[in-house]
Structures are given as C-alpha cells and as structure tokens.
Length: 274
Image 1 (cartoon, rainbow, N blue to C red):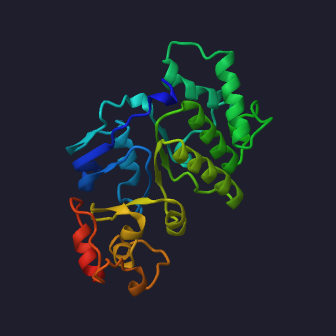
Image 2 (cartoon, rainbow, N blue to C red):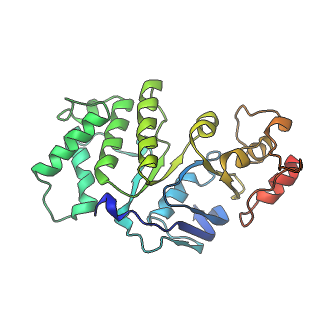
Image 3 (tube, rainbow, N blue to C red):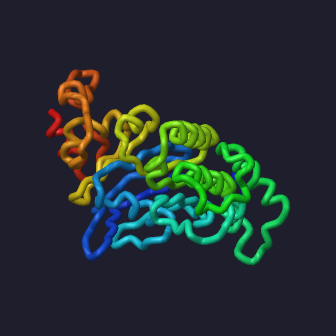
C-alpha cells in the first residue's frame, strides 16, 4: 500500500450511534469527512471523541447506523492513540517502534528489512530525533515519545490519519513541530482527524470541526460556524470564548446563519445563538 492509493471518496457517517459502558456516547450522528479534509474533534471528557476514532478505523462496531468507508481498506487508516494508553515499559528501541509502522503495509509475516529501517531512521530525523533511534522508549520524555509515534505514523504513509489528543502533556516547541507535520499531511491531500481540547488551536489551524457534547449530540461543519459561544456552552466546554454577539455567525442578509442540516443538535444551537 502506498500514498498513491489515497481514495477520492469521503468517509460518511449516517445516523451513527456509538455505545460505551452500556450508554450512548454518540447518538444519531450524520456527516462526512471529505477527502483531504482537516477536521478537529472537540468536546468534554466522556463525549465519545476517542470512541468515534476507534469506530472510524473499524476497531469498534456501531450500535446503529453505518459508517461508509467507500471501499477503503482498514490498513489505509492510521490511528495514533493517546500517549497515556500505551505501555512504555516494554524493552524496545525508538527505531523498532517506528519500523513497526511498516507492519500494516507489509503484513504480519513479511520481514522488516534494511529499506524499511532506513525509512524509519529518516522519519525519526523528520520529527527531530536524529541519533536517538537506539534509545529505549522507556527513557524518553513525553514529548520525545510523541515524536516517535508521529514518526511511526509517517512510516505508515496512510491516506487517512486519526490522532487522539496528540498534543497533551508536551511542551510548546514539540506541539509546534508536530503541528507542522499535521499541516504537511493536509497539504499532501491526506484526510486528517484530530481530537483536541485547545479551542484557540482549533480556530487557528482547523477548517472543519466536529463538536460533541455530554448528551451524545454533535455539531459538525466549518469551524467558524461550529465553535460559537452558544454551541460551546451547550457542549459544556470550559474554555474562553468570544462574547455571544461576536461569536454569532451572520449571513449576508444579516440574520444568524444556520448550521449544516442533517446533524443532530445543529439547528437547536443556531436558534439559541440567535
């Protein structure tokens, strides 16, 4: 599988409900991730953000509705999980972790050889870890380990990339370096979906946003339309947002613009903003 296999069709969600621990965490969500789009997923803890990423790559079945991947192979979707969910006590080097990114492309029974390790070394250089390939992952800082995970994702060369809170527990310099890689993936035409809590970063860098709330509803569309003060309040996000008058999106006629139809809760949020 190579980057040339990037699909031209969107990933569609039609009335998708996802369940964790016996309760609905996402309910009746409809929308699509366009090819080459860059989308942030925001919401309070427990709103189903990580669950959604697992469902998108086929690791979690939907409770109802459907996710249409348009024939996209599961190996073409790369998921970078939250750093805190990974075991760093296993005695393995940075270079070997990155090289494991080839497994999805080669299959479990094909040997990772010299060419693949050379690509892993180049990926480590691209994330600022030149010379650290043989260091065990247990000896890394949180920021260095996240760079390793980004290097592994680079090696995957996947057309669809899902990142679950990739900037948590890292310093500002590391966040800036890794965000530059996210921008590069977007310019290359990959579909990138990122779970984030930083609303300022979302507004500055992400054209599209899916905002989930603790009542299992979602707002989905252009970031400037979704991250209004009213929608953020309804989603129960504790964040600094512009005053309501400044955040309300206006149409050319001067009346409040409507959110895209077909997504649960969008019209109700737009009416509240009015």
